[in-house]
Image (cartoon, rainbow, N blue to C red; front, side, top):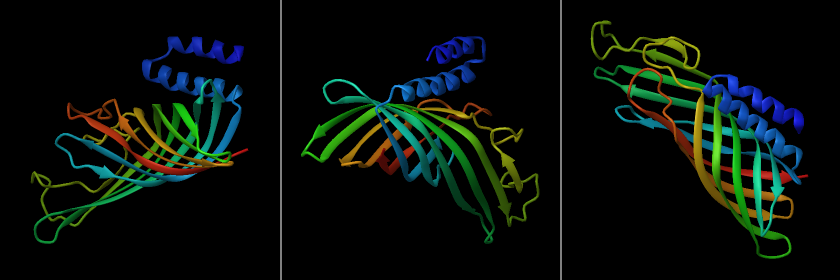
Length: 229
């Protein structure tokens, strides 16, 4: 624990974005050390990226990882962990003369939740629970492939250049996103013995757009099943 605290103080000399990411990681590790319950979790997630003056992009994906729960008083507990999210999106924009532009996106995110959980016992083996709190969503990889059947000249305002883009590390003039996505959300579920099923929704809080003043936010809902050991 002392080693973790020492590392936290060292991050104050780093850039703000990196500080936040590392502080969440260190906080998650510190909580995991003191946890009473560990769970494996798998589920489906449906993130959406939306904003002004742009069309929304919906993803489908799976989440997989582990969580740790620290028991507090009066049926309250603190839940944290690390969850990987593998997502995919396919979108078609139609144009006149049967022309179309196809957008295919694949991504990998990591979630670091810090949720306050309240549970209510219904019987000896069944509990209902609700939770709320922040989640740090960190983009590891997001690749966008654009293909087109357009016949417009590049000088035409409707022209879209076919290309493949790494939206986190590239220098594309249209698509550049921040990796750090701070979210706030909540949800609920039911626990039976060592099994839990839950659903929730996260709202994106910070602008992901690095190009211009058009703001982009990413949130979404999810449902998952977990097993404690």
